[in-house]
Amino acid sequence: MELSWVVLGALIFSLVSADNGVTTTTPTLSVKQGQSTEFQCDYTANYQSPRVEWKFTNNDQETSLVYYDGELTVSYKDRAEVFPKGLRLKSVTKNDNGVYTCEVTSKDASGAHLFGQARTTLTVLVPPSIPIAQVPTSVTNGGVAVLSCLEKDGSPPATFSWFKDKVLLPSNPKDSPTFQNSSYTFNPTTGVLKFDPVTKGDSGEYYCEAKNSEGSQTSGVVRMNAEDVNVGGIVAAVIVSLLILALIAFAVWFAYSRGYCNKKTNKKVIYSQPSETRSDRNFQQTSSFLV
Image (cartoon, rainbow, N blue to C red):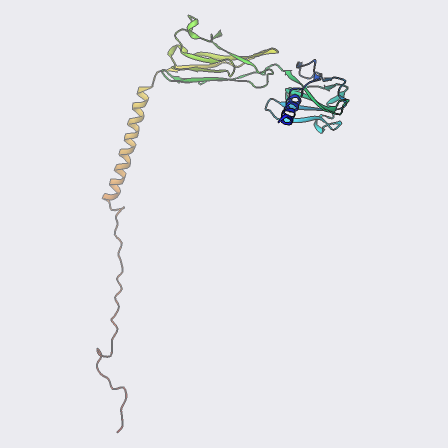
């Protein structure tokens, strides 16, 4: 029993001290696109003849090796450099966004295994591109209208705003006398603006803005018209449909009345003579017998 407690205590100690002795002075970094950056990885003197590895995990949680077994991997050979207790990355792009992990393994003076790691989160700063405003040009009063603002180049990701007739839409329409008669919801993270229900007053010219710490861009202007249901058009469509059905029915009746659809075909009847048997024929002497 005492031995079991000793083993359990050693295991707990190893788990608790797994990250001991390895630190970084750069837990977060923000660098403009095209510039270089450095990641620091410091470890204590207990790590004698340490083995150092660098890993990268992107924003999609995909992990790849940067520095392994004493050399840079193929994808980093021309754009990275390892120096004592650090890694330098040249000309960063948006694809370099993610977490860089320094892992150090070694043995101390007593021969015990040591392991530690330090992480740095890198954000590459990129201004947003011109967003695309997806706006329905014609909507029905009382219906639902969804407007989308699309922009994916900004880093950090852009936040969005919407404008109607050059006036900024507040997050809550009831907070503004200009938009208090509208019923919409807006998500500044996704850029989706939803009218439910649409009213006549929602007609206007719309555009959106994408913005992050590096700048802002606005989309083109698209007009949305809120219209009443076209009762006259619906009635006209129904009348036209009925006329077409009546015309089809008349054509079918005409074809049947003229016999085009039930024209009889003459069938040939083939009669065959019944075969004669010997009892049906007149007796004919086929041979004579001599007594």
